[in-house]
Image (cartoon, rainbow, N blue to C red; front, side, top):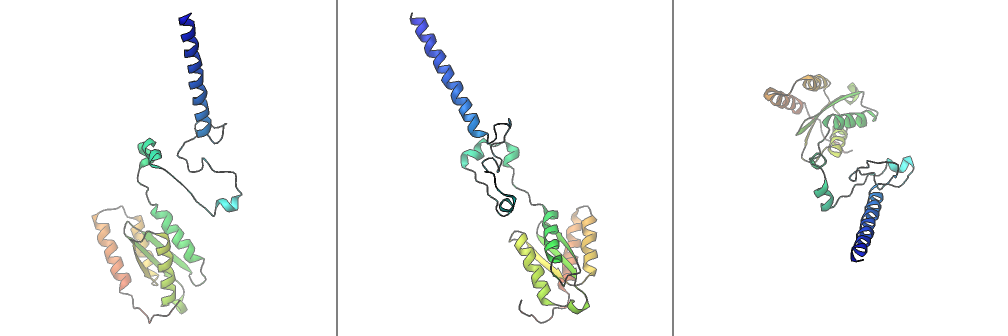
Length: 191
């Protein structure tokens, strides 16, 4: 009799553990049809939204416990996509009327922007300020931004993009920066 009672308690306890494990699994999965939902996926708790709102807001929240459970791949320090930043800066500049052509290079410390805005706008300080502020709004604050209205510098920047990184690359970047900063600065005008 004693063994039957103990076996009943063990069976009930086992059923409770299995039931609670299933409940926890359902809480982790936002979509019951998905079997391998990543707990750390930023969209895991995201309710259905219209597309317009979805593109206006971005939100992620982690706790210390979340970070302790993450795989090493998930914990890696975020990397900045320099090509994407350069692309964004250039596209924003090209949406402004006076810019006819622009080139942007983003390194680990610098943003180099060269543009052509036509002869009538060649020395416009206003356009340089717009380009500088655009880059500063995209890249982290520790980046140095250099802007040139000389279209020849677009070719210099482009040649760096094709180079394989080496010690000589840093020297070449510094030479281009020197050339860009030697460009005659007109009197400043307010934006």
